[in-house]
Length: 202
Image (cartoon, rainbow, N blue to C red; front, side, top):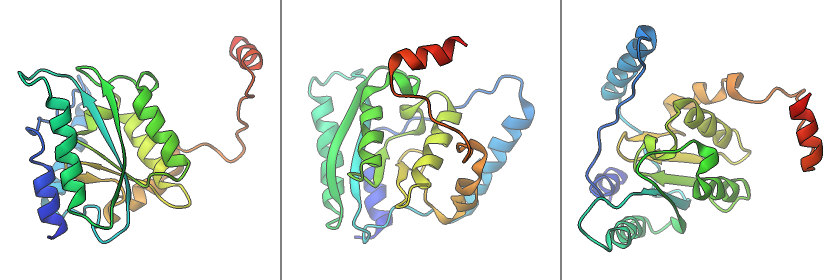
């Protein structure tokens, strides 16, 4: 089965929601987003290759608004069955945060654990249904994608609904943009809580 067939089936896991971004009066940003969407429609999309031995973490933002009590179990089974179609992939774990809307990342414990597992080398591909599952702040998602891609062994995110794979070749230049990355001369804050509070109160 081709990677296109795999991800077409993956997109049937749940009803595909509309991806809406509200920018208020920022006409320039809105124009750029519209142009980017049109550009995405004009290219052949790249998706995670089933022939690459990915270690996969599935991120689910769960809010039961269906009449089925076991909907989460069904949702997990659909993901597991789809991953099983890629023999070289290993499903490491499910990471599930509950809530109707995406939080800020710092309030999503399962997402934080998923990132920790990525940095520990346990996972090199994250799959989730849509961008807004991760954060309501697009800048956070961009920062996260760049930090993961900047690792010695790059880590990708695949967003099913938007059909976005962060390690696609057409994103490589953007991912190398150092704007969001820490400056080499930055020094980390100390680990002790008292010292951190001291820095914050200066």
